[in-house]
Image (cartoon, rainbow, N blue to C red; front, side, top):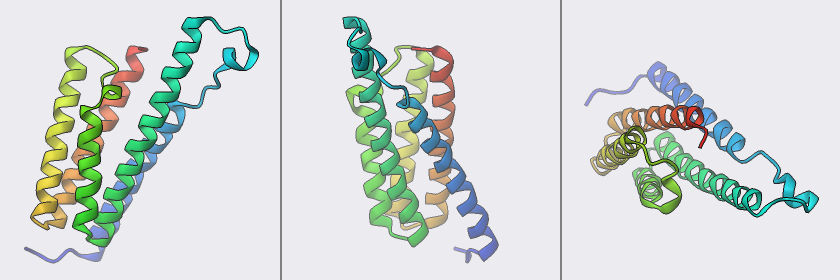
Length: 156
């Protein structure tokens, strides 16, 4: 295995931090709306249900972001256990009930690719291959961003 040069680490760190910033801003936007009907006391049952669902989505995205932060920390410190921990949390989230916000073939494709990308990242961490882990994390992040873009267009 070749040695990683400082310039490569610097570029990779910038890419990873930019990707995380994108996830963080999306997670914040996903739950930034105030449940106005509940505050005013005039919400219908349907509006209250949507407010509850929005709050659940926000909490879910915060959990996903926390898992991603573990992975980035693990990559930065070459802590393969932390990379594995964050990856396993992501894999569990993908299998959870809050994951399935849409029932379309495209969304199922994103979900399947997320599982595969997380599996490849876990394998790289198991092999203690930091370069492969960084690249696999980048793949995972790109899948997240593509899926988020798709969901925003669907207006579920």
